[in-house]
Image (cartoon, rainbow, N blue to C red; front, side, top):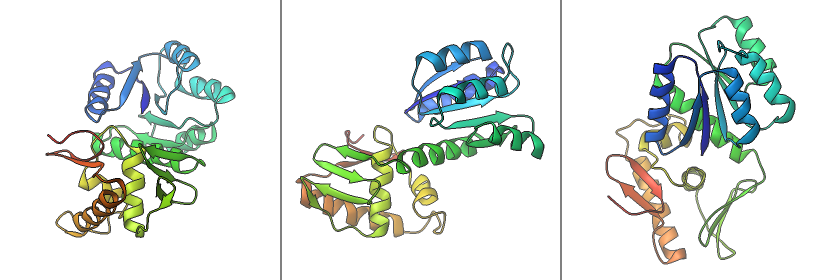
Length: 225
């Protein structure tokens, strides 16, 4: 995942960048609207985080200019402007979400996960990991063309892990996106479903593609710590 953070408050910008890089995102950043448009014109991003009060061209100008040539890339506005009219203006201009300052990094990270997952699952795409494939339209998993018989929860877990290949996914994150917080953190339900999924994948592939990262979560591929 390649993200761009556009934020003129340098301490906040650098805090956000560090937080996202710890989650294994690839992150570019800048502090003004002119540099933002330069980067948006030369790089491809999976998500843009945009402050509105920018030096040079302001955030709304950046957003409207960007939307003239790119209607698909998700944009999350980060702004101290918290009035309803400001949010409506931002969303009408083409933003996909709006987060008012001050905010907790945990909420920002959750908004990012939601937007990037939505970006993948709304498209007719095939996610792959070696011989394993997942069709996001039909929501079916196959290994070498053979369909896997998965439950709804197993399907949700597999899809989320394949969308976020390359970074660990915590149990809490799966609770939020697969269970919609309908189980608590002490429940054994998630571990039971993951164990069942891993058993089916091991049978079909001959190995388990899901790895444990101690203290971090589950990772599609990679080695255990």
